[in-house]
Image 1 (cartoon, rainbow, N blue to C red):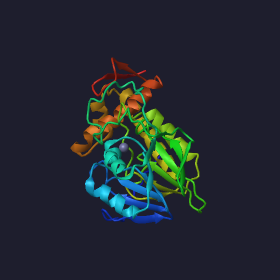
Image 2: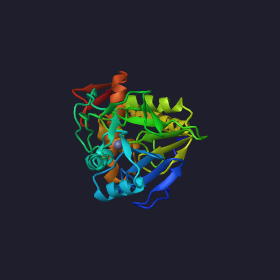
Image 3: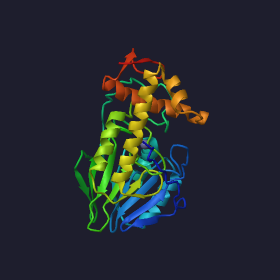
Image 4: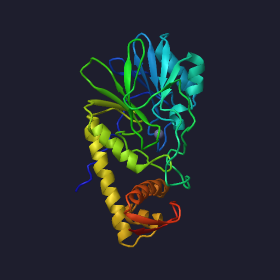
Length: 307
Ligand SMILES: [Zn+2]
C-alpha cells in the first residue's frame, strides 16, 4: 500500500497581521517558527461583536499586542485552549491580564502512560500543564458560547491527553473545525510519550473520520479541506509505520535505535531523536496489545522482543 501522506507547506500570512480566513474567523501567526512549530503557533479570533481567542500562543509581548489590536476594541470574553503545550499557552497570563476573559479547556489530568518519564527529546520540547484549572472545564461534546459565537468541544487525546478540537457552531455553509495540533496539513502530529499516546491518537483520528467538517484551521500551518479524509490518510500512514516497526522487531531488532536505523534510512541526524520518540509511542501501543514484550519499564533503551 502506498503511503497516502501529502503535506501542504504553503501558507499565506504576515506576522502580526490579522487575516480573515472565514466569516467571523481571523488568524494571527505568532513569530515562533521552528522545525516543530512550522511558521509559528496559530491564534484564532472568532465572533464579531465580542470575541473568543483560540490558543493565546507563546510568551511574546508583540503577539499579545497583535491579538488586542485585531480585537479592535471588541471585548475578548473567552480564551479557549486546545492543549497546554507551552507554544500554545505561555501567552495566556498576559492575555488574561489584558482582557479579564474566562478560560475554557480540558483542565487537569493524570498521566496513564506505561512510559514513566520522558527520557529523550520530545519534539516540541514542551511538557503539558497537568494542573491547569480553566474557568470552564470542557468534556467531549460540551458547548461553550459567547454573544455571537459558539463552539462544541471534541476531545481528541493522543498528541496530549488534554487535547480538544473545537467545532464552530455556525449557520454558514462551511462546517469549521479547529483541530489544534491533532491533525495538521504541514506535517504529522508529534506523539511523544508519556503525554503522547499512540492508541489514543489513532482513536482520535477515527473520531475526526466520523465527522463531516468541511474545513480545518489547525494549530500550525495553513487551513485544509475535508479533515475526515486527511485524518484517514494519517491513520493509514501510522498503521503502516506500526506494521514496519513490528516487522523490524520480528526480524531481530531489539531496541529503539536499531528500529530507527532500519525504518528511517537516510533521516537527517537532527530528526533522529524525534523519530525515536515516535517509535517509542508505537511500541507502547504494541505492548498494550500484547504484540511485543518489554524487559523492565518501557524506555528508549528497553530490550524488545516480539510476543
Ligand atoms: Zn502541541
